[in-house]
Amino acid sequence: MRAYRAWVAETMLQQTTVSTVLSRYRPFLARFPSVDALAAATLESLLHAWQGLGYYARARRLHEAAKRVSVEGFPSCHAEWRALAGVGDYTASALSALVGGRRVVVMDTNIRRLYARLFAENDGGRLAELAERVLPARACGDYTQALMDLGAGVCKAREPRCGNCPVRGFCEAYERDATGDFPVVRAKPERPLRRATVLFVVRREGERRFLLFCKSEREGLLGGLSELPSSDFRDKNLREDWNSEKVLRKIFSRLPMKTVRRRCLGGARVLPSVLPSVLPSVLPNVLHGFTHFRLLLRLVEAEVVEGASNGGDVVAPYFWQEMDREGKFSDLALSTLMRKALAAYAEVRGGVENGLYQC
Ligand code: SF4
Image (tube, rainbow, N blue to C red):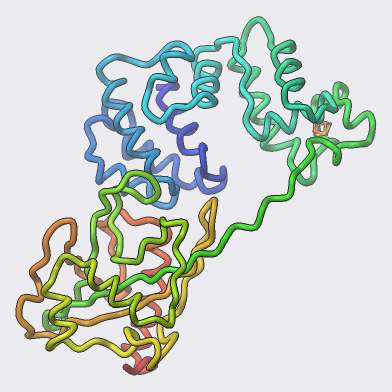
């Protein structure tokens, strides 16, 4: 059980902050209390539980690896952990030390910072040598856990809590009054800004409202989740001209449900927000930060008028999902980006209901 919990925690922490993981780790374990439960779960339910953690490829690989572990048992060394889907070199080291007590150097960002200060050393190769040299012969799991705790809770990046530090007596940087010099922090390059458009295609049936979604079949960023149709913000060469109606037509043309496109052109009412030159910025924009870029999403709405023919006919991976009055879709596995876009849209729809937003 300890191996399973540590594995889940290390996987969640790979690209997500501790504060975000804290609120999702226990609910995840409550839903999938063992590796067998995880292996038996559907990918959809796993992605649903992974919401808010980002980098959903991790969840898919965890699922794949859980199926294997459920049959073969837990790994017992670095090489066996490394052979599992989604387990990289660092995670394999951490798990073989934490779970198996193996004598192996574990070096994440926090531990590297701690070592850099303890040894007053900024050279990566030299630090690795020193870390190897001070590894204890026994209880490597406890030792590694202690390093992780010290790095995360005491030897913090900005303001190390030297006054409460139990290893202050061994700390060379503290001794030299030079904790700010270790490690050397390189300025992060500014993340580029991409612009994209997300489409809210609405279908009404009396009082009921449906939004068009598609199930992403891609690997990688946001793969496997339900999402709104959009221009391809994953394309790093994306240079979208928001004032261009050509861009909008291109997005509409990508939709496989020709019915909606036909309706938009011949019979369906397209809200003015689809034509930014007529009524720009009616819907708010949404800014979201990914690790390597920032994304400014323009929200565009199109409505399929009640009573028009063929409105409900869409083919996979597209599907209609009913919207509640808050614009929520609790049953869908959605990325934080899509949730942000939906929240912004719901806010505007609230304005519509209250007569604040006229199209
Ligand atoms: S004394 Fe300060 S700088 Fe040194 S390890 Fe402890 S917290 Fe970090």
